[in-house]
Amino acid sequence: MDSSACSHQFTEDVDPTFIHDMYFGPYAEEKFICDAIEFPIRAILNCYKQGLIKGDTMIDFSYAANIYQILPIYKCFKDIIILEAYDSCMKDTENWLHGGEHSLDWSHAARIMEELQGTSADWKEMEKDLKSRVRHFSKCILENENPTDPIVLPKADCLVNLCLLGTISKDIDHYSRNVEKMSTMLNKGACMIIIGVFNASHYIMNGKKHHILCFTETDLRKILSDNGFRVAHMEVSEKTSCIKTVTFDHVFVVCAVKESCD
View (cartoon, helix red, strand yellow):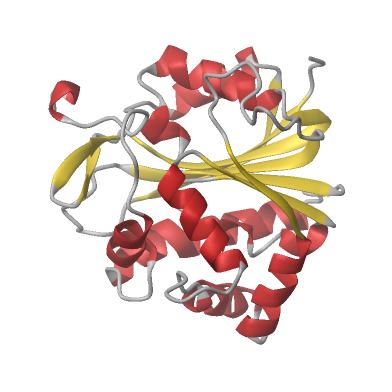
């Protein structure tokens, strides 16, 4: 479709509650939950089992105040930094961290992870533990020389990006520049985990179409290589959901290791 018919999320704010209820919450379409939550958690667990995820500090820079993507690996890190691209997401993250009313519920994602691991856990205790490791949260604007200005963050050992790059990148070159800027947040040898979709077009939020960048696995591999990353693990899953409010062909999870120096 003509991308000009879509709003671009690098110019407009996001409604995290709508995104949660429609796409990622416990009452979202069942098969879409399999595509958007179960598959990524399984793939990230596979990265962990291969010893690719390690270190002291992790950055999560994801879309719409989601946190389920770090549940499988948060215990690997002493310090967690949460970055948000939008003011509304900053408010939701702060509300969640402080146990405010109407915080987004991720207990269903914890249950999915438990089923995949064959274990059981107390979600409230897990959530408390996760929050205790969050050392900082901040607005992040990749277009700025220092994306977290005026704060200068320490370099991290892992960066997780769920669905954000595809919504804020105008085209392939812009996506590559965003990867380059995120690379500066990482130590050499650190890993970047990107969760996204291939051959996408748009999604619906509050009755309005919003942009998702259309690109392929070939494009992604070239972008990562051009920016000094080695693909250590990648999994791709064909869309199983019949949901009409978001268009894509495949979900991917890639774990890429930073091999270059800044």
